[in-house]
Length: 364
Picture 1 (cartoon, helix red, strand yellow):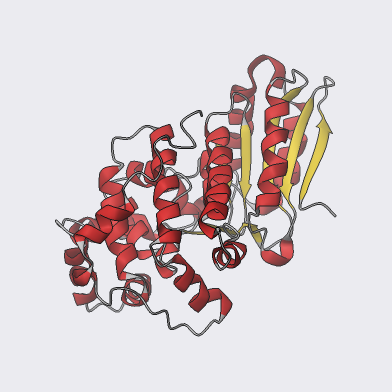
Picture 2 (cartoon, rainbow, N blue to C red):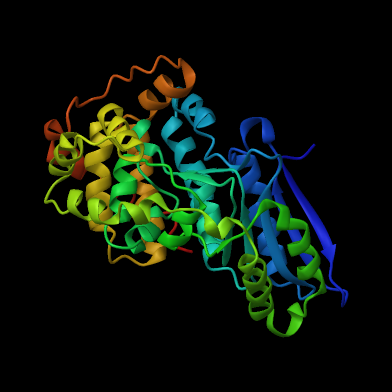
C-alpha cells in the first residue's frame, strides 16, 4: 500500500476536497523522501485544478499525525560516500514542500492529532488551518540529536509570544494543543470525535464562492462546543518565568539560569533534563539561529535552514546524535563540546556559512 493516500471527497456541488494522508503508521508517519515525492506533485497538480476547492492533510492511525523527518534513513545515507549530497536532496525536497504548503493558494486544513514532531510540525504549521486536539503532542526535540528546529521553525518560533519560541527551541520542550494555539502555531482546538462532523460540514459548505470564510465558520462553530478548548496551556502558565530565563546575552547564560532553578515543577524539570543531556553545540546553534533569522522572509528562512542542515550533517554532529538515540540506543552521544560555554564561536560561524554560490532553493 502507498505511503501516501490521496482520497477525493465530492462536495454537494460536484467539486472536490482532496484528503492527503501520511500512511506509515508503524513509523508514526515519519516523513520520508518517498512521501514528499508523492505529495509535492499532487499539490502542484491541484493548484490549477478548478474542481479542487480545499485540501485536508492528516496521518493514518491513532497515534500520530507525523513524528518527524525520517532521520534514521538520513543517518544511513550519511554513512555512505556522498552522504552530504543525499542529505541535501532530502532537506531541499522537504523544505520545498513546506514552502508550498505555507504559500498554497487554496485552503489546506491540517488535522494534527497525536504526535506532531519535527518535520511533522513543519507540515502542520504551514497549513492555513492547523487543527489540534486533546491527543496532540508537539515537540521540536532536535537539541537531543545535534540538530536544530528546522522546517521553517526559524520563522514560526520567532513569531511566538515573547521569547517562548527561543525557550522551546533550546529545550525541545513538549507542548499540548492549548500551548500550540496560544503560541499561534495552531488556529483551532477541536475534539478528535468531531472529525467526522467536520468532514460532513465541509463537504456541504459553499467552498466555491468563499472557501476561507466557510472553513472558518465550520471550525469556529465546532471549537465553540469542543471540550479541547478547556485544556490548560503550561507555556502560558510559565510565560513570566520563560521571559526571565531567556533575558540573556548568550546561550550559556540561559543554560545556567535554567539549571540553577530549584523547583518542584515537572514541566520545568523536563526542560532542565533535556538541556543537561542535549547537544551543547545545538543549544548554542539554536540561540544564534533564531537571532540571525529574526527578520528574514519565509523564503530566506528555508534557504538559510537548507545550508545549516547540510552543515549539521557534514561538519556537525547530527549523525552521532541519531546514532545514540535511535540506532544503537545507548543514550550516550559523544558530543563534540561537553558544555555550552566550550562551543567555539568560529565553529558556530562555520555552520552558518553559505554552502553554495547559489542556494538550491533560490528559485522558489
